[in-house]
Length: 127
Image 1 (cartoon, rainbow, N blue to C red):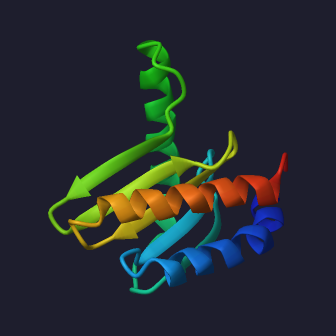
Image 2 (cartoon, rainbow, N blue to C red; image 1 turned 180 degrees about the horizontal axis):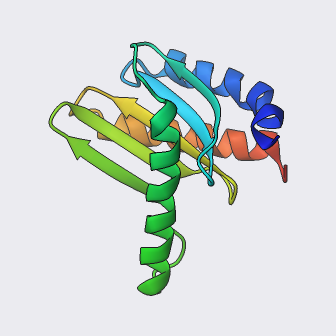
């Protein structure tokens, strides 16, 4: 139910994210319980399973930072041989996942994704 409410609000913001940052090849919004809300991509990725994995990863990050008393987990970065994936809280119910295949694009990925996540948080409010 939440996914259907969120999709029309976040899809235009995902489109703008991919349009504004050439280095981002795909982005998706998922619920913290692993449901896909919306996705946009320039390349053909299979992203459905990433929704559940991404929400699990953010939950693990939240647990780790709580255990270490380091405050809230804002984002998790996966640097890989062929790119970077950023996982970032939008609010307490939603996660933004963004993907680049450019290994030198971490700064751009984080900067654009963070702005997008903040805009999404304002757009969805307390849904």
